[in-house]
Length: 351
Ligand SMILES: O=C(O)CCC(=O)C(=O)O
Ligand SMILES: [Fe+2]
Image: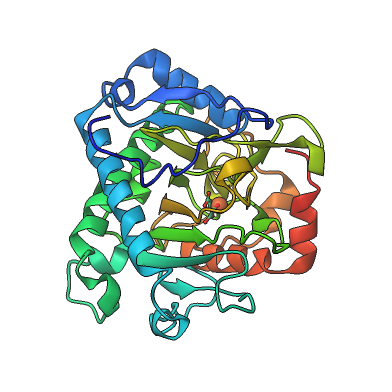
């Protein structure tokens, strides 16, 4: 890689923790519609729904990786340095539960730092609206609007390449999935910068950064530089000893499918369960940052399965369930994640 990334990788990932070898996909091959690569994505998405995407083998990928590094540095310069009071002035959306806009930190330590994590969401819909909208980024992010937009444009291209590959593999008419994920259509897509404060020497701290969950999205594209992200070993019960580290790799994004894809395919494609804990080994004292970009179906999309020879028909019971639009579904899904009973269920489910 040409640019200096040493500020993003302050300490090495340890080699004595159990990691999972995620498959690697080439962005270059995807953009060239390489049949083998498209087939590979489909297989992965019917299993764990998680893979590494090589951003360095295509100029578009390099640009996106550079933008993600810039977004991370914006987080490094602002989040630890601004008072909570200032950050909290950037409000979350009224529509309860959909964290696609605003700053959020739920729990604080005695020293005023976030206990687990803090994150700031940049909404795609407002930044790309065709008509003028009543929205402004807060003063501390205003100067970075173009960087956020550039990363979001790239993320939309990458997400649609993956969705295009999946719709073909599922024998769905062209555009079935991609037409639901246009850059300018109202949706709850966002760019999120997360900060997980490092462990302070001598202080005991809760290990958890972000409890076990699946994303209420179609596709999630994650850039992260320190360890912390974990997924369960496929096929095993989700118990404490079966969680595996996902090692961040320079030049790669980590992609996963979310719940929307399980719904559209009636379970053929899998939404990946994951969690974030404190960075391992020598990385633990450093603040961990992530840059997450997600694609969700456009707001009015009915959240139900498509028909295809490869998608099982809905059962009678499934047919009785009310079909929500994407915006209401996302709001409900995220609200339920905050329900302790749901959280317990997630922490002990079989992947
Ligand atoms: O920071 C990470 O590694 C993942 C964050 C995440 O899972 C989320 O925001 O949904
Ligand atoms: Fe997540």
